[in-house]
Length: 181
Image (cartoon, rainbow, N blue to C red; front, side, top):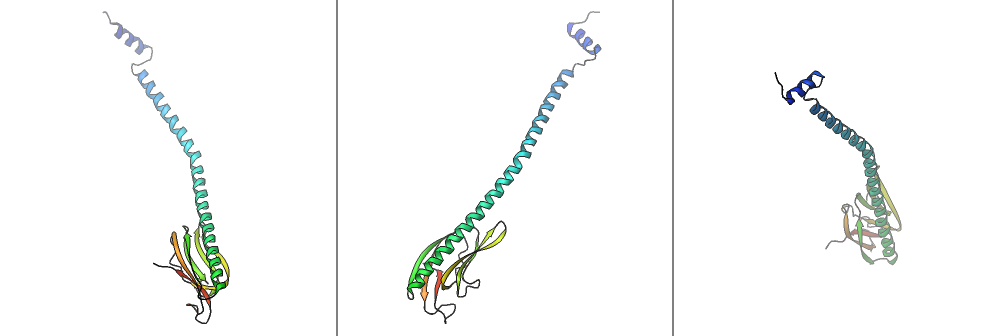
C-alpha cells in the first residue's frame, strides 16, 4: 500500500509523540503568556501611579484651601481698612468698595459673630480640616450684615459712618452693608 507524503508525515508525527494541533496550541500558549505579562506590567504601573495621583489630589485640595484663606484675609483687611478711613472721617462719610469673595467662604460677620457692634470682620471658610475663622481687626466700631454674600463672586459694599448705629442706636459706628442697585 502506498501512502502520500502528507499521510507519512502525519504518521511519523503521531508516532514520534507530536500531534498535528501541537503547533497551534504552542502559539496560543505564547499569546496567552504575552497577554498575561502585559496585564501584570500594567497592574504594576497602576500600583505605582495610583498613590501619585492620590498625593496630587491632596496637594491640589490643600492649595485650594490656602487660596481661600488668603483671599478671605485680603477681603477682611480691605473692609477693615475702608471702615477705618470712613470712621476717621465721621458721619456722614460713606464709601463704596468692591470685594471678590473666593470659593470656600461660608459666612461673613461684621463686628461680632452676631453682627453686633464690635471691632472685627470675621470670615468663616471651609478648609480640608473643617471650618476656620479669618479675623481682621479695625480700631473703629463696626457693625453690619453681609452674611448673604457667602457665594463666590464680586460684590459692592456700602460702608458708611453713622451717628446712631442701626444695630445699636446708642452707639456710633461704621455700618457695612451690601450696595444693591
